[in-house]
Length: 306
Image (cartoon, rainbow, N blue to C red; front, side, top):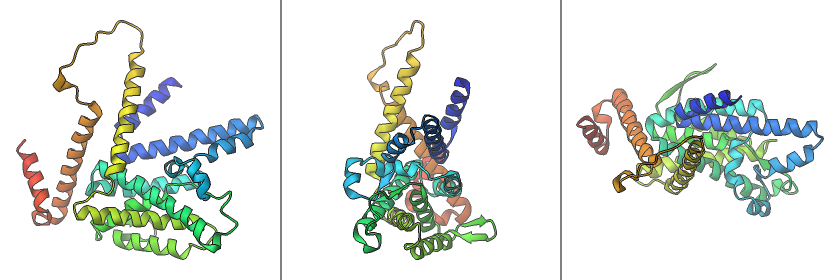
């Protein structure tokens, strides 16, 4: 078992950012499914449901204040296997398209921003519209749909004519797909999954806002990325501490001041630069040198002379 976990962790580390989010989301689903199985065997489903509920996004604003982390954790949870499967397939396809236009850092920010805005739309709708009166208490939201839709819309804004091949539909432009998804969600805001479709609209708005503002030179995801960098750095330090607990003598060599730069930050910047160059080369192959902006031409020139 330890070997399997180690192999899975190594595969997780080798994946790009999209693969890492898919691995993490699937791992969360499996973990909570196992909790449900164990709880059922011990006739403790009530306790398990109460525990799991603190990670779902409640429609009740007062309850959300008591569990603010759920505005993020809910997007890593799913109501069932098919719910998980469709969201992860969409993330796999459109996440990889997204990082051809943007960077790894942008993916993290846009994905989390889409989930947060989608969740806030959900909570706001349940506390404002009379349609939801009497249904706020006990209602909750799970799923990555809003976050995934933010990725889709941001990609469509960046390259509206980019085409994807969909089963039964053939080649479809990203802009057409994004608009169709938004329209369908809008038409279904009074359906059985009204809250989910309202969250979709919030995620779409977040993706559009991210792309438009970035074109103007402002990255609205900077605060999210700053928090994410801190959390990842802490995680790396925990892993290093765990590895250092292996038995046997260890020789710790003093590091010079210039060598004390955080490994995660260094690797993150290096990966981001490589992602940006890959995106520029992809854009160059599709639209030619004239399609590049002055800043992209400068970055490509600098990279070619290193």
